[in-house]
Length: 367
Ligand SMILES: Cc1ncc(COP(=O)(O)O)c(C=O)c1O
Image 1 (cartoon, rainbow, N blue to C red):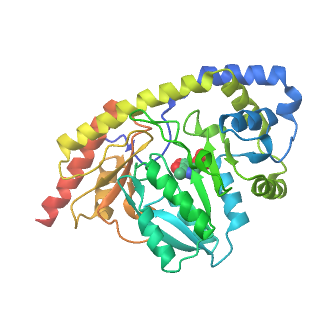
Image 2 (spheres, rainbow, N blue to C red; image 1 turned 60 degrees about the vertical axis):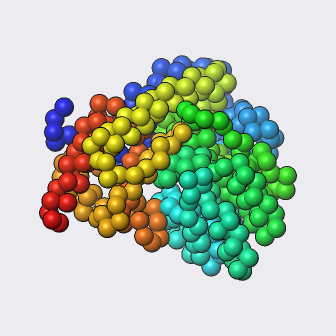
Image 3 (cartoon, protein in one colour; image 1 turned 180 degrees about the horizontal axis):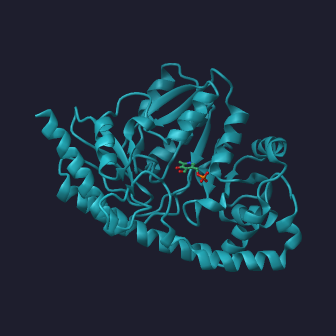
């Protein structure tokens, strides 16, 4: 391998070798042959009907509770547009997905960032903030293998969060693109499935289980919320990409999705193991909790470590990652996110080696 070739731990995306290209090709062919009118027309703002029905069935919902969008980022944007006015308080996890922070800042929301713990959001910390007078409109939570922290919200905390949402009347936005990607331990029920009070709007995506280029995601929630999102969708793009959704519908119905999920999970487990082992060996100053699924590993370096400088030194050595500060409103100067999803194990070993060299170069410079 060329020393100059950049190895990127920056993108939360699968590598090309685990994308089910042949199954997608076959799904496209079947979709175009069996339903050309559905695939090639504008369709409705709610999305391609057979896909909405498949999603509804998977989540114990009905078609009117589902809107399928161009990626779940679009679903998130619609929901925020619907629910968040300038000055509204929105709870987020700290750290959280950088694009969520950017969207909420752009809408003028008051962001109430509640720290993450090993078992997800500090829900009691949120309870204290609520008791002290915080009145959020919405709590955005990534329950499984959180981006960027890798942590999963415990069942007890899921229940407690729903209880708080009922008492303080806020919406729980369960943003769950990684839920299917558990390669270790027991799956937990979605908050959507535990909700008896119409408090949860759930989002997921085919980006992480099929491929991001297909741009297919969705929301499941109370019928009125979904109907309002559909109105925003109509005004935005008439209808989402029917060609993509027809392919995804066929892909799901044929059983190719389950195969793809297995392939991705196998690769992720191997990549997580390679990343953790390489860090332990080459960068023993790094502390981290190995995630039980998903794409990300959150790494903490000793207090005082300068990850900003590390990022530049790593880049010089052909390794890219995202600084922890991108996922936080404050703090986290000694943290970083490694996405192991898009790097093969041999590249991981090389990449972590280069990262460790970059780290040592800073320590030497500081000494
Ligand atoms: C938590 C979270 N939500 C939403 C998205 C957006 O995904 P999509 O490709 O479906 O737009 C991502 C992608 O990284 C994510 O990590």
